[in-house]
Length: 190
Image 1: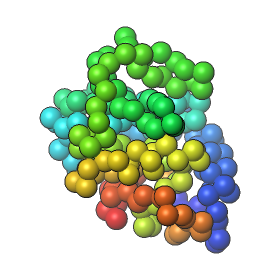
Image 2: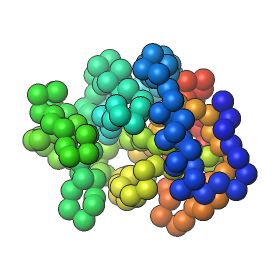
Image 3: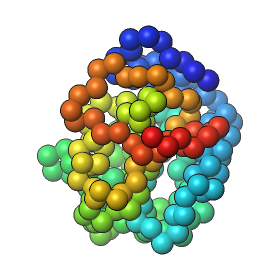
Image 4: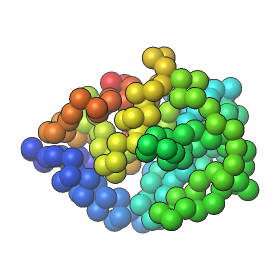
């Protein structure tokens, strides 16, 4: 599906794609998540890697990353907002360490932290992404700040329910493009 309209800025795109995701039924979201998971697992060797992965926020109809976490034998790290609005990465030991925060996000309550420079792959949440790998997130810049701290060899992989848009109109110098995007239909390399 291509929902692109000319001259769209991040704020408009954010609103549009939040609404499109809200229209997805649970069954549709699960099918989409299964296809994204399958495409990711067929394209990348994830076993034995250090992977930053987000836990899906169900009220925002995010991609179900549990389908990946439950299938892959890797060291998964979960993002937690730390000091100065920097994302910390905490080792995922199991669901027993998770607790819902004030925003409805499951976060680890304890665990070992890893430096951003040690992560091999970052699975990145997004609302939409353009043909150059630039994404629109929720607007706080947490992921762009985190990706800037990762090592040069780290792969940034977006997980996305729809198809890319042509271009985001109002990028800035802090926006960091992704290397790949996994959709239900394809794997895109930027």
